[in-house]
Length: 228
Image (cartoon, rainbow, N blue to C red; front, top):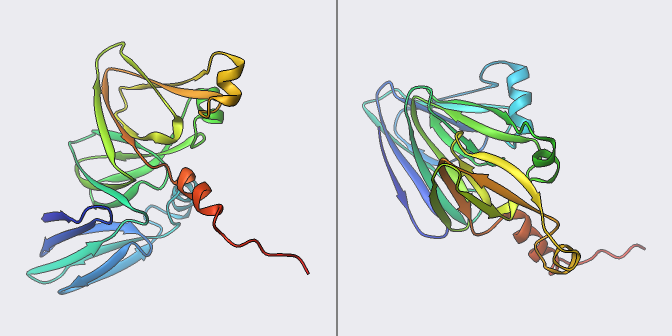
């Protein structure tokens, strides 16, 4: 299986599959394809797992695309301007992602829920209790809004982040919520009352454009319907 990520702000992911290879994505995730490709849409693991995935921002049904010929090409596109990140996961290697980050993966990769264990992180952590967890072996691709910056945190090193900017992190990273100090900072600093604390060891990925920020910005220009 080969892949290529093309573009800048609206990237595309092109995957070339050989006979017998397959990938799966959320319902409606495919943009275009060519070759002898079979589609199979189901809840992938049963209704309960499908419902659990929907809590993490994915569709109830997933679609598997399998190459039945010698070679086939299939293209996926993200839902918002941003970056497509490839993840080459080893056996039992996992990655914790924000809700709705999953884009496409080989059939050997497991997609499941990840719950934040601490109450404060769940209530004030920007995305709630529920995140996504991808576990190898295999290739997976995630979509991140805006530009992406990656940092390697050493053991005990902490980075404080506006929760909406957290895109992905390794399971070895500890996630907690801290309150902004000072009344004026809390209410007039523009960063909210809480910040996320990410503590190493491990790698983190941060996004420049939380979708909630984009939605709030666009809402200012949306026409307001007047009641009759």
